[in-house]
Amino acid sequence: MKTYELIDHTADMGIRVYGRTEKELFQNAAEGMFDLIVDKKTVATKKKIKFKLTAPDLRELFISWLRELLYQYSANGLVFKRFMISGLTD
Image 1 (spheres, rainbow, N blue to C red):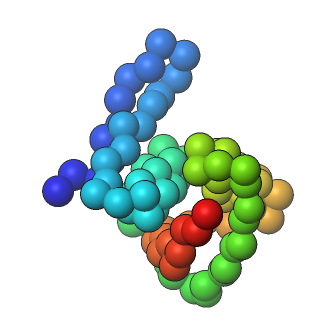
Image 2: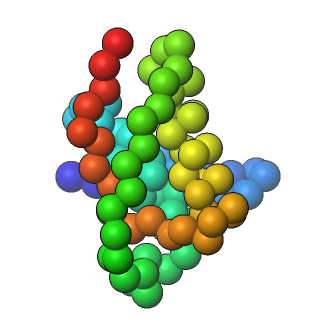
Image 3: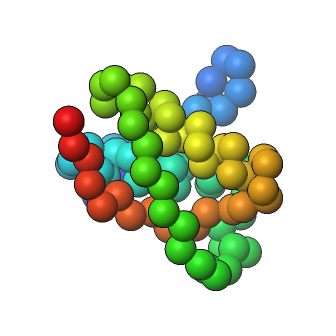
């Protein structure tokens, strides 16, 4: 199954994300976003980092998730390669 695809967008680049579950959508979106930023083949897995985010609804949580990853990249120079969502709750 395809997890994401990079697409042309009038402003820049875009990502079309696929997943059978909400967890897969979150994971695949993060992988696709970092595929746009870096060549993931050159990234070594060194450590695990956990995030706990809250938001009023799933859409806002999705946006907060991607924003947090971008913040970690831009502020701390962290590049992520693999993602695992352990839980999504109301």
